[in-house]
Length: 124
Image (cartoon, helix red, strand yellow):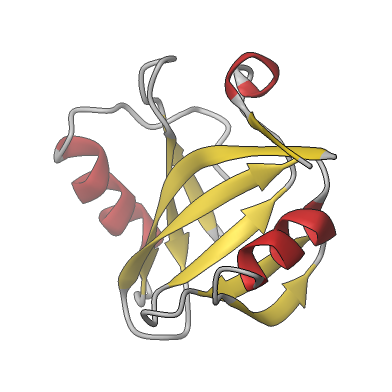
């Protein structure tokens, strides 16, 4: 048994200026940047507590948006999603990059949301 839930939106930016990209994506929804930004690769925005997190990420591939699904058992969630047609692309640190049967990339990550325990789905 494991649990998982939709966690957040990650705005992948192929850019040399993550600060400028983060400033734009902060202004678009009106979410201020968090002061703890690691502006080398990630900038974190302050979404309201009841909404998914939003990150701006510097990447080498084409710019796109992807989602994160958080799970208390990364491998079990990846396996569950494979039964629905997803495939594992690459293990990075403690998460999986996966691809949906429709071609979109997404990540299965460890829980980070403070609402995980109260809102996660339970899977057998």
